[in-house]
Length: 166
Image (cartoon, rainbow, N blue to C red; front, side, top):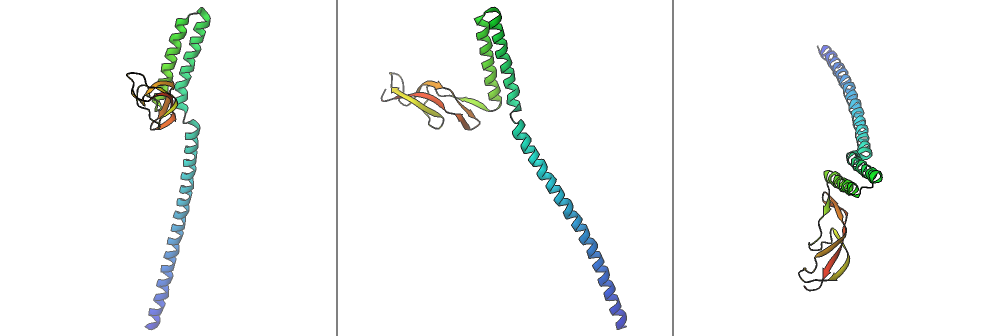
């Protein structure tokens, strides 16, 4: 009887070993598929990043093209009948279109005139003595308009600031 019992053990071990080898092959295939999927995901992500960088400004470009068309039409109108009114109106509409295009992308003008000087978004180009009715430290003239995109300053507003006592 002991011999029969010892014969069963190697058979059980052989079956268990075969089951483990099959399971090992399955796990190796799963690992191979997982590695391939990870590599594919990396490639897709790299491609998506590349396209986002390359074409990310397409929306703004479409809006600016409309503004360019407006300026071209204004110039054509000015050359055709020497009408300054049509040029002024064309430029006014184009400027409005450009501002709208920038606002749609999150770019807004920095309000400065009459406000207290803010060094985080304004650059003082000069200071002048404070006039009557003007607060010291307030912006009395904007030399160059500043712009912000969302919460970042694209270009600081260049301003003249009142100094001294009112």
